[in-house]
Image 1: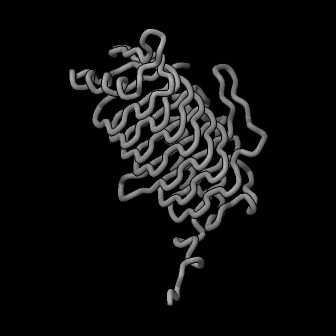
Image 2: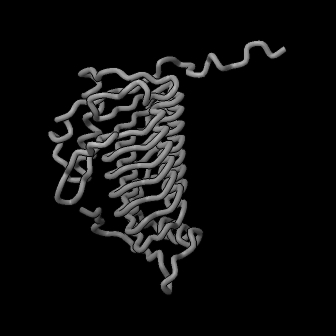
Image 3: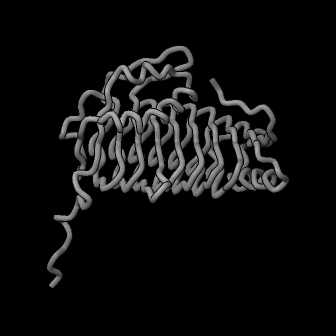
Length: 266
């Protein structure tokens, strides 16, 4: 089901059959916010970059179309809902807020995120969750309904990544029987946790510095609120998720490349 706003200002991202430049579209968004409008619908979005860049506060943006790279970059507080797919680097260096994608995203989603939440109905590309980090009460969370590709959670320093391995459409929910993740899973991880809804993660699929363990009851309780929220957004019955167990990928040490550092420089 598409995300809808009851009362909002509408901006058309196409003019005379030509997509607006990303600069013009973003300026129109800022103009409306300066007028006090905090609920905005963007129609016919066609690859414009930097939507929601550095916005903060109680703002909601509903996007009909496909936003370009760096959706929600540096965002601190707003909520963005996308009826469609999104391109690369969603939530780049995001500080807080929420991004919900009713489709797939490209590569490097969540790059260096410091907080906030990203929910993706479908699948994601390469190097998703790279360099995510957490500090005190701030912790980024990514929940992915489909599958992820290689180098998922690379160099993680904190945060929580969850992969469900489902193919979700409006009327059906199917298990994805193929592999739910790519090679080099958690390569260089030294903080945070990756949760994969699967019965096994072979050691040869792990990246340097990563290890796989079983979940505890505490882990299940920890991820449950985010799975529940994901199910609310995309019309999934939560009991379907829990029919399969999860595996948890965590750091094997705090210095995964410690043996490669130079000791004697003379």
